[in-house]
Image 1 (cartoon, rainbow, N blue to C red):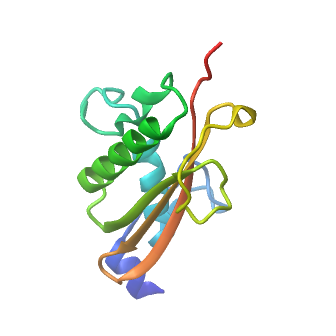
Image 2 (image 1 turned 120 degrees about the vertical axis):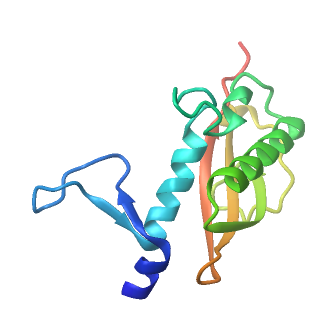
Length: 145
């Protein structure tokens, strides 16, 4: 496990917390990469004053209709953000579904019962170890009134 930590690194846990010894909790290895991906996707462009291009444009879609066009834009924005800001991974596939348990290959269809909830399935591998990983990121659209 030490070799993986040396290759990938470590950083502050997100959200920042205190560890049992009273220091800053750290995220290590693959957990650190997953937290970094979530930080990138949760950060709207312009939110960080000293780095205004950091983040993901997906937040521009909050008021978009829940349809396949919005899903395609979400996929593009996620791929662009991760390619720009997470050099330790190679994204192999990004898909959108309405169910977190689906495998991500079904086409997206609007379901009024879901109130605009989309699940973004991200398949990637860690470049230094060729370790395949996946992450499901929930994204919520604000439904029309």
